[in-house]
Image 1: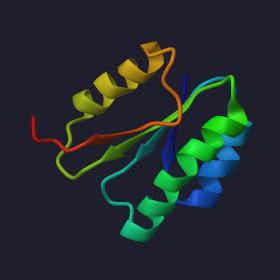
Image 2 (image 1 turned 135 degrees about the horizontal axis):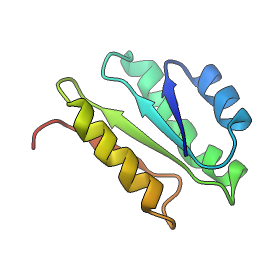
Image 3 (image 1 turned 90 degrees about the vertical axis):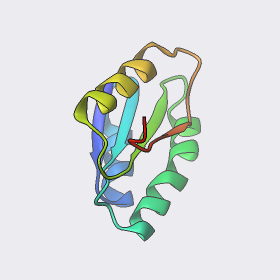
Length: 93
C-alpha cells in the first residue's frame, strides 16, 4: 500500500493516479479546512477510478499520535474489502 501525505487536491489526484496498487491518503491536522474538504470529497471518486486497487484516507485531527496513524494504516492494509472510505482519527482515545 502506498502512503500519500496530502496537502492539496491536485497533488493528491496526480499522486493517487501514479501510485502502484492500493493507496492510503493521510490528511494532516494542519491542512486548511477548504483543502481538507476537497481532499475528503476526492476519495470516493478516486476509489472508483482506481478499482480494483483500493483508495482510502485518514482524516487526522490535532494531537493524534504517530502510532495511531500507523495502526489505522495497518487496518487499511489488511481490510481487503474497504475502499473509498475516510477514517477520522480524533485523538480522543
